[in-house]
Image (cartoon, rainbow, N blue to C red; front, side, top):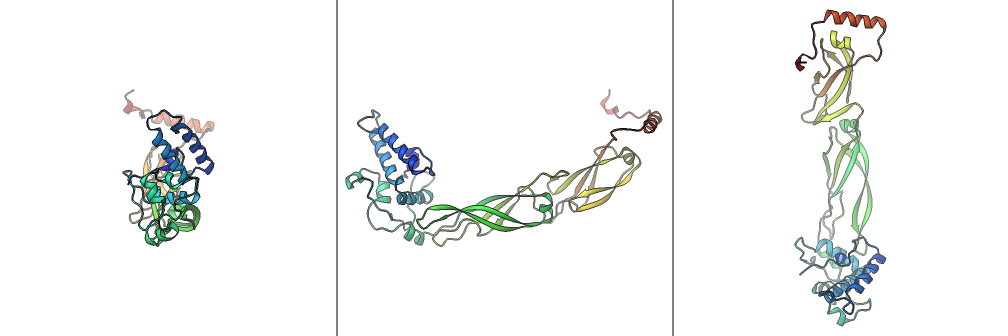
Length: 318
């Protein structure tokens, strides 16, 4: 059976309020009325518009249709009613007669025609077991929280059926335990914490994607943590022991004698924890004082004279 997308027929969204549905119906009914329109398919379009409005104007029929649209429509445009489904609303009302009803599609007749009255509030939920939807949420963490692990409160939205069978949003809040070593883009799966199942089906799962807030000092590459550490010219020239930060605390690092800017030192195992912990990469950067004393300038002049054979741009061949 061909599925009828009544929202598409009227050109409205599935969240459209009743007044928008009524407005769209009146506009299209005038456009395709057989006594007015000269389009070849006006009569068929007029029937489609009337059929769509008959369902969407009625809250009970619309709720049933929304469930059918969600669980019965196939990717190829065909339709298969969910097991155990029969209309709870039946046909009638809205000024249509039984003769009018026979002008509607087979889809409408089977879904909203006469017959037994057993619908989403009864037979559908009892006869059709369906797993709840998985829910995806994002959780922003500071770098230290992801490194050490923490407990965070997360609020997200799930959709569950109300007494009339309509899926309505509900806010849900959980305390989530974040294991140490979570990195950007990794996921945590909480089984059964997604949307509730239908007809006794199991709940969906909650998938949490971790986001890391930018840090003023550290950056992440895989499980390695990078930090740039400034050193004074004399520390770089003579060598020194300096204190550098890591995500897990401060450590002392030996700067080799004759260090240039950009030199990297690797601190094994000081990166993000895990089965194979990462390292911390310390990038050394020679920093000059903003101002020099007159005596310091004289010392630099003496150094230039003593090291006159050194050309830092020799590789550029200039």
